[in-house]
Amino acid sequence: MSFFFFNSFFFLLLDKIVYLALWCATWIIFVGGIVGFLANLNNYIRMLISIEILYVSLSCLCLATGLLFNYYAYFVYALFFIFIAAVEGAILLLWCVHIYYTQNEIYIEHSYKMF
Image (tube, rainbow, N blue to C red; front, top):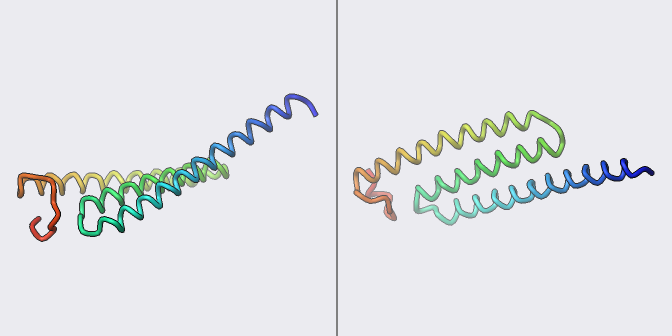
């Protein structure tokens, strides 16, 4: 066995370990987004931020899975999730501006006062 083979095998194994670590971290972020969504059912802005976290974790999960299995269709899925997250973030920003103009504050606890 030559040194070159051992060296290249080590770097391939290191790449797979890094991709698996990224994959596991995105699952942890995904579960955190779900827990944040379920814990804040009374505050709509926090719910939308938790949905934003879910979209970001899904796009990172698609990137990690595409890199791990060398399947490039996952990159298209990641772009789709990033686009959906950007649209949802714009809606969240418009909603915050509307709440500020109607109540002169962003902090809300009672959703019936919003409109």
